[in-house]
Image 1: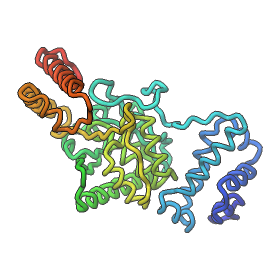
Image 2: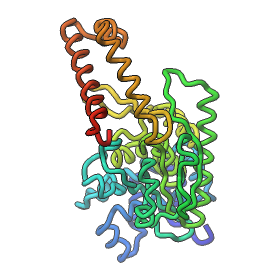
Image 3: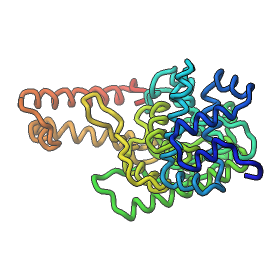
Image 4: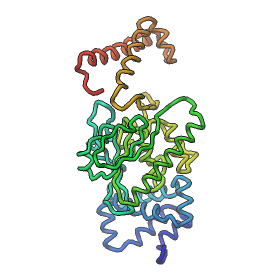
Length: 361
């Protein structure tokens, strides 16, 4: 801002074709910087993205920020194409943690190890923010957090407020509820938008300090994921679609509540994006909502009661139970078989739990 404006940035400000912006940026690198870009294009991509996102003074950048970084996203994709043309291999998910084992989307839930997963690395310098993301259990593991260099916690699960021990790690709370209905009331959506804006304000303060923060909710999928998403979109130049895809690369079934994603879209000014649901094997999509009650305490009992009631209902009137969920099938025998399999699955879960051998769910 204070010196001469780089040619590539002037080109960006004219909304030139993304590949033209990228070509100008690459041409502006000195020999050492170009060698470094060729050797580690993921770092070069991050530097380009940061150079754009950090230019808060620029009206064109702010306009693109308010539109959900559509133009910047196109520039970043053009950079990837340009570097791949040189033979460089650019991982699409540079923040994928070692816990994922290199697989797309590490599993989540009570049957897998509870760990924090890296979203963005941080070096502790003021103006930078490192982000880790976890469920409630991992957020309580002080030694693990400190080993990852985490300096602050941000809990966004309403049911987890007041559940953390005083372990010396400063903890912020924004009590978001994970609710899904076919039609969410406008006042609830507005409330979520206000809360996500609170999250963004907290993260900006932590960034000013150079913090490394662990963002957590109950299950480590929806609310925490959406709070990571708002930072990626509002401050790092990611489009909403790219951010959701990135987070689903880190944790399977991330951002599974479409209403919460809509709230994030509203906060970052992206109103015309239809983010797909997590894909299901049958061509449909998953909607995943955190269970109610307090984290890891009580919710299992509630679900066992619901399961027992469902089993009893199925035993009394299996056809009605199947039709009540509007299962589309042309074969009544297949419908009954599906109900029977469902009863068997629920019964097995209950037997394991009552026998004490169920372990984590």
